[in-house]
Image (cartoon, rainbow, N blue to C red; front, side, top):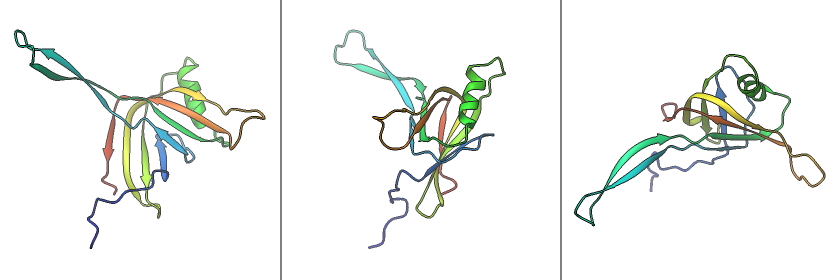
Length: 150
């Protein structure tokens, strides 16, 4: 029996991050590829059983990226120049790109007008096991799925 096209599942840890003007290493974890729309309810007057639901604003949670510490500090520099200096704020567009096992692009999540809002360095000490991990949190104004490269 032939498998239907488009029904495959993909391994979620083959992905990369592209942010305009910033060369980044591969990340080990990505969270926040979400869009959440507020739904509000209005009760109909005189009828206790009728409630109408309406769409409110859509919000986009921050994207959180984690990776092992590398020699590259481009994301920290972007965070520092945006949040801790008098420089002009640099909003950037970017993409989270998912690949299959052969390195072919499967899907792309594009985010827009992004700002770094939090950088977390690695935990250090004797009780820490594994590799040193850094994290950057990016606020943005929208996300779209682009699977045209698939």
